[in-house]
Amino acid sequence: MLILGGTAEAKALAEQLAARGDVTVITSLAGRTAQPMLPPGEVRIGGFGGAAGLTAYIRETGVTRIIDATHPFARRISENAIQAAAETGIALEHVVRPGWVSQRGDQWREVSSLDEAARALPAGAIVFLALGRQYLDAFAARSDCRFVIRMVDAPAEPLPFADPVLILGKPSADPAREAELFAAQGITHLVCRNSGGASGYGKIAAAREMGLTVIILGR
Ligand SMILES: NC(=O)c1ccc[n+]([C@@H]2O[C@H](COP(=O)([O-])OP(=O)(O)OC[C@H]3O[C@@H](n4cnc5c(N)ncnc54)[C@H](OP(=O)(O)O)[C@@H]3O)[C@@H](O)[C@H]2O)c1
Image 1 (cartoon, helix red, strand yellow):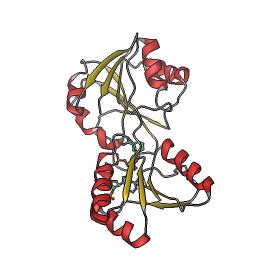
Image 2: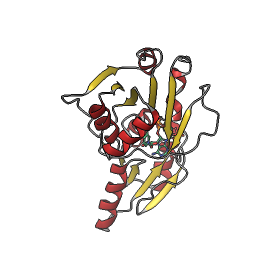
Image 3: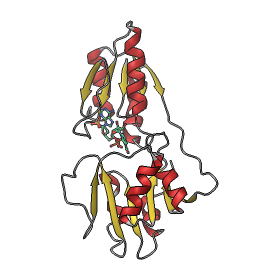
Image 4: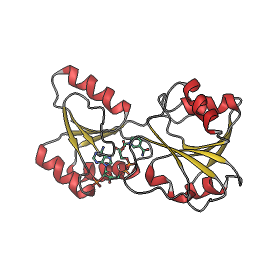
């Protein structure tokens, strides 16, 4: 059984399946973070080389079933899994984490692209970008805003901003910790994706409590 992972759900699934003892569980990680949380069972790290590479991997290893438990915004690997499963004729399940739903008190502006998110920021905004490195370029032209960026690992290349504040670490599920961070940085706007899940929800609840505008990218 091949679990396409990189999420808390994928790790929980590997733990559940490994505990059964009657299946071989291989979790695949993209290798984006330097110190990933390793699930039980076999773990392989790195891209397969597109749908063709994943197809070849399935044939070589004799995988009989794939569970795609990747992040809801990781679209390429999910598309590759669909193609590889069709090519090899093996079963594919997709575990999709539900998105967050806005609640009373939320000040959400829902957008459908990163460019739209960048345009939605008013001049002078102090913006918390809760986005991975590959999502930042759309904001580079907004030199009239100040950006505070949180990442798990330090970026290999310089960030595309004149004077960014870089915070290394993972999001907190605790709204009080996120609120403390937003207050310390004078944040006026939060930009994030509608990833869903408990571990990233702290920032959404904190923004609600503080009355911050959340520019949120839909699925
Ligand atoms: N996007 C996020 O914000 C986010 C957040 C938390 C965790 N993650 C995890 O980080 C990984 C990468 O995210 P992404 O947004 O860059 O994905 P993506 O755009 O869908 O994938 C880009 C490429 O990375 C490789 N890849 C992705 N997931 C893989 C996996 N589980 N095992 C092996 N190769 C994988 C594939 O390379 P090849 O074509 O060479 O096979 C894929 O074509 C995902 O596994 C996801 O679950 C992502």
